[in-house]
Length: 359
Image (cartoon, rainbow, N blue to C red; front, side, top):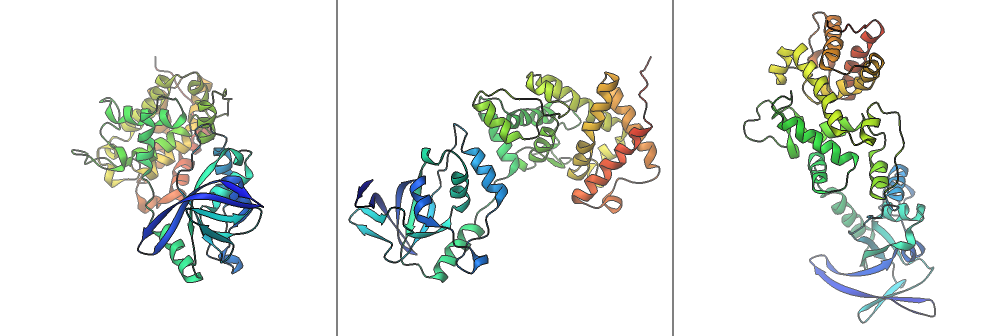
């Protein structure tokens, strides 16, 4: 970077593609925050969507992570006469507007809301001489052609890191539940989100399993991960199995989950043997059971027992309450409403439930 009379100059790489020539540079985040803006469609100024406050907050929090990284470029449409080329450098005035953001507004707004913008230099693509139609075309291509990464793959990738975090523990729990022959989910989890050979009864993805299991020991998994990577001590957050997670008793986490779903398998044997014909062993039923599990665990802790027999008695009481009602989508529907309905029906039996220790 070179600065003279308030003019900033940055080295560029020229990139040729069918749409034309654009230029790649490395620019400090603070400089971009002073010189670009996000022109929003809602204000009839540009092509950008309205920013998401939750996404901005998420990125701002991420900036404090010692491993924070933004490797993909911010894309800026340069305004006429606001920036120019001088040989192998791009030039523009500091503290003056020089272009609209076509991609990357949430990254910049998140950095702006953090205390760490000064620590980041960002890759930036500068595109010159774009009219409104071309800006809209580029924005639509960027945002319509991206493929969301499978959540099961994301959780599986945590198995590659040596650092402990909620996501890595969830991945290990999913892998154990799928590989243990004593597990009701033995060979029934779609690892990486896909069925493997001889997985005719696989009705649940690794990603859904991991996301749901984390509810038992972490209210804010991403915050916990960042603190653990920074060696900041975690606090209790009132999730039912938090203490075991903090004490690194992952064997206990696995045992409680095994006890719960082994009991469900025993009580609802017919549904377990025909998982495609009911909701109980699909994502709807699994998430419904998981939503009820914190209360069941609290009840078990009150009795000082979280054994398979305890959960069997819980689910027998639930089954008795069902009567002739079948656990099918015809009776429950699909989605979150169905999950909540199932969870509420399980929890309704807690009012009169009494655990009886086997002699």
